[in-house]
Image 1 (spheres, rainbow, N blue to C red):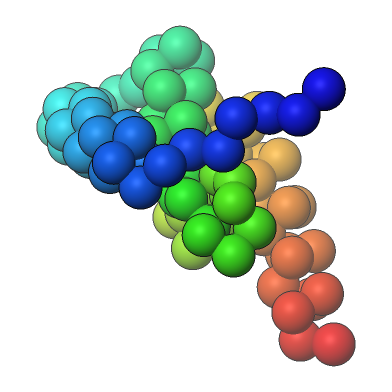
Image 2: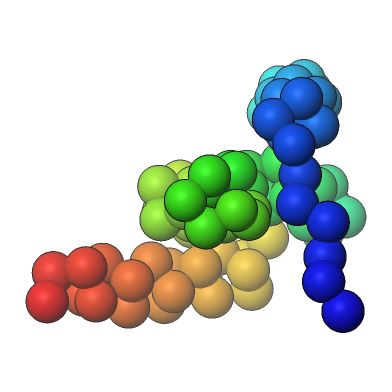
Length: 90
């Protein structure tokens, strides 16, 4: 089954909503797990080359060391960031 590719207008609207919601979430002193999951979704970026959404290393690194990120997720993101950085260095 072929998935529908997002057109630029749809992507732009999604990115605008993500930016607005991320701004709201970033104004909080602490995130619940649900809010953290929203932060992750809002941190995804559209990659035109791959025609899909990606979770970029910069966002992973930022969230891995953000004091608002729940401890369990922070540790996982730190491991992911370390491995991704090593892969890029090769």
